[in-house]
Each structure stands twice: as structure tokens, then as C-alpha cells.
Length: 103
Image (cartoon, helix red, strand yellow):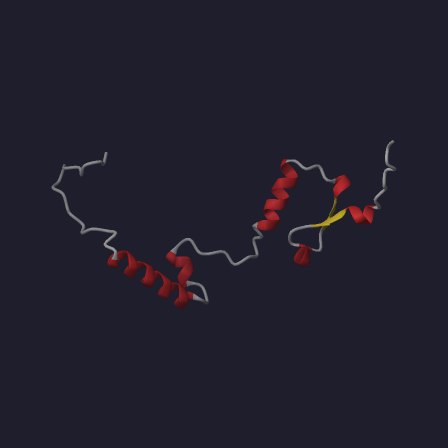
């Protein structure tokens, strides 16, 4: 005996996108081809260009409003590395002599 198939209205089939509160975009499950294009669009939603991303370079840090906090964090990290003696002293080699392990 087979159960009766329940029909779902199109309104019930809509899904809210990841950034719905910002974009107000809804996707209809029946009309979406879940493939590379769909995955790319979801990734773009996640990596919204308007988000405040962490800077990659010091020059980017110095141009931000929160530069003093970044400067404190950088100083704290450098002090921690120094305290744990992560880096040794710089040793200059004679001209033409390559350090061991370098090409």
C-alpha cells in the first residue's frame, strides 16, 4: 500500500540564502541546479566583499581606524617570539659561502 504523496506549495519550497538579512535573496529549491555555479554563488555569499577582513600587510594595518590595537597585538606577538627564543641571532657568512640547506 502506497502513501498519498503530499504536494508542497512553492512558498514552502523557498530557502533563505546565507546572507538573507542583508540581500533579501530567496532561492527556490525546484529551480536551483546544485552545481559549480550554485556552489560559487554560495561561496561569494560567505566571503562577502563588504565584510571587514583582517589585513595581510602592515601598510594595510596602519591605514585602519583600529591601528593602535593592531600595533599592540603585533608587539605582543613579537615579544612572545623573542621570549621563547624562536629566532636566533643573524650570522653573516663570508662572500661566496652558502649556509647549509640553502641553494
